[in-house]
Image 1 (spheres, rainbow, N blue to C red):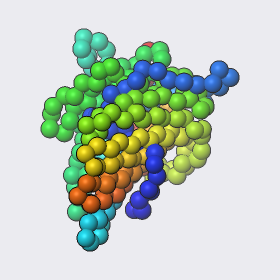
Image 2: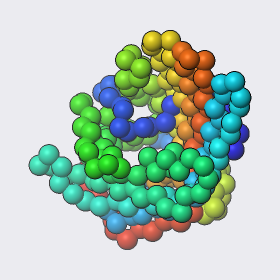
Image 3: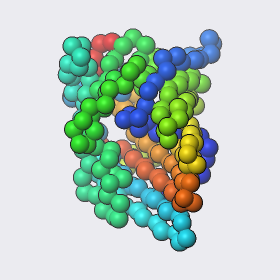
Amino acid sequence: MRAYLVCVLLLSAASMLPLAGCGSSEDAQPIFAGDFYLLKPGRSWTYDGTYWMQERTRATVEYSGAFALTRFCQEVTYAGQPALLVQTTVSDVTGDRPAMAEELAGGDYYSLQATGYYLMARETPGGSLEVLEPPRLWLPLPLLLGQTWTWQEDWLGEIATATCIATGTEEVQVPLGVLDAVQLSAGAQASGGGDWFQYTWVRGVAPGIGVVSDTKTSYESRATGEQIWADINLELYSYSDTHSPPTP
C-alpha cells in the first residue's frame, strides 16, 4: 500500500484526551436525515484490513500484510451509567509486522447523549483500562456539513490538538459494495526531544450502518535519523443489525 505524506490523524483512542467544544455554521443542515445511529447493541461489522510500513535509516525496508477485523457492539454499564461497548478482535494476520494489526484489538466504551457519541475509555489488548477525562466527542449528533470538533493528544511529551471535520458525502467502494458515506478527516502533529510525528485520518461513515472505511497514515522522524511511514486501511466486508437504535 502506498504511503500518504500529508501534514494533517486517526482516532487512536488510547491516547486521546478531548476538548469538549465543536463548531458548525448556523446555516448548516444535517448531512443525513433519518437513522444516523452508528453504534447499536447487537450490530457487528467485519472489515478487510491491510497495513504497510517503511523504515528508512541507512537502508530502506518495507513491510506489508493483511488481516481481518471484527467489531461487535453491546449495551453495558460503565461508571454506573448505560454505555455502549464496541469490542474489536483481529484475526488471520499475514505479513512481517503483525503487531500493527493486533494493536487495533480491544474495547471502546461510548456514551450516547443528545449531542453525540462520547468515547469514555478504552480497554487495551493487554486488558488494561485507559480512561479519558473528559470523555472525547467521537461524533456529534446531528452531524452537519462542515462541522468541526477538536481533542488533545499527548505525544512525545507535548500536547497536540487534533481537529476533525465532516467534509461531505461521496460514494465509497468497499467489499460490501458501493455506499454513500459521510467523509470525516482529521490531522495533528507534535514534536519533542528531536523527534517529530504527524498523522492523518480519513473515515467514511454511512447512516444505518456505521464506519465503512478507515485509513490512518502516519509519519515519524526520530532524532536518531530514522524515518518511519505507516499506513493502515479498513474496508467494510459485512455487517449485521439485529436490534433497534438506542435512545439518547
